[in-house]
Length: 345
Length: 280
Image 1: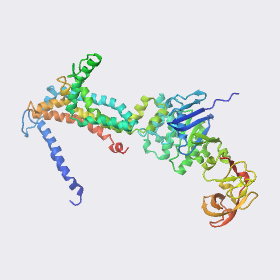
Image 2: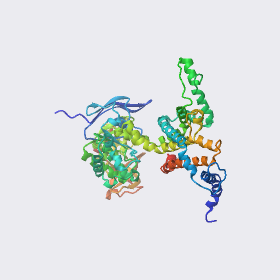
Image 3: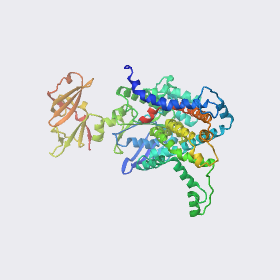
Image 4: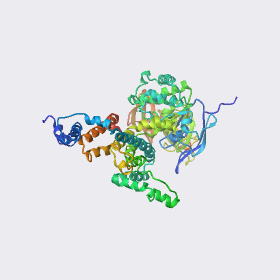
């Protein structure tokens, strides 16, 4: 049985602005119904890429196929896709209902049908029906997010794009909306392509994540793969605090350069060690003495900032007897070599 | 009096407004109620001037003025919209230069510019006709001394008054709203109707009002370019005051123009939020 064509196929997609290459020869298949997230720092080209996908810009070279049909030259208003903008770009001169109905009005859907669909969509994004006649200017930040989402869904798109829509939202609301978005993805079964600078946000929602750097994908994988098997220090450091230890091979056997510990099996140039993989007490694996320079309570976990020789390290321990260490104390810390992710660059 | 210092600070302005704005208005209204061709302000008031304003053929000049103002407003709006869009898109040295070139003629006397346009349009040896004849051997007539010429003059003079408020209006349209509308399936025409015009409406309204009111009071265009083809209401009013020596009739016509203007301006002004316009 032949596989259905991918929802979106990118072939050598490139976008140059003058001498600057924002999107550099990207090829990729995005599966139907996938929640695909592109993560990158500002200036990595992720917004330029999603603008190409939505048809708001045309690529310098490369092709774009939607379910096998070439849509490279099709303008945004004739693509069956919709975007939730970073600024939301709501029509402030219109009501909530008129915003949600905009795409349907453009298609010539009769008013009664539009209204019924808009009320359905309000329910879907968990807004009360009596928001329908309200001016969008009277909505709070989170409500505006939901209106923007309902408006994009109002065009019944095959693919939804999100350009960092949650970046201006406070932490707690963002967490709520992340979960709701994931549920919405499961309920609608549509393909979601999401742009963010937060790998943490991507981890929560995505089926697959692409890490973008200077116009190219550094790594593509499931959240688990990205987390456990980053393929570079760049990807590893994206997940927030992480210990990166260089391997020195100058003195015969490989060893951790900064810790002066032997590293007999070192398949990479750098060892990436998550803070939770580093714990007090010597176990089976390598261990070393470290001075506690800072102790931070993170709720269920305690974070220790350590100094071993000239190296600063971070360890995280579940709250309990093992977190009894205080600033100024020196203790032995160890790790299991199996927890190391090896990278070459 | 110590309780309200604001009133004392405002007093000079209040006196000035009463003397130079309210008092002349009262005098004009009072004169309009006097018997025809009288020069004194008495208590012998009546509405006979207003009756003759509607009966004695003054309606035609007023109609021409209103029609000319409406047409000019419409045409300058249609011309200024794409101009404003282009100037807004290409902000930079080039756009500043073009903007300055459009603004520059405002500092030159209107009559001088209109006589210039008259020389340009003149038949035979006029600039346009003469050049076409000399270079391309094409002979053309002229629109000089027609209603069309008066209208062309009105558009030429009032274009900047539409353009500059409209530039402010166009600047109030965030680019992402246009992209969002396109992304949701809007054609260029739908983007204009659903997003751009409503968002730029304050600028359009200010430009429209400015142009309309100025056109209603304009007479040089009709006098210099229109010849005798068209008589506008301001020319009639001037004639009543000067040649006809009928101050009450001139005053009555003036009051009518003020009433028409006020009926258009006040509802429109109430819809404009100047603060919002200037903040962006």
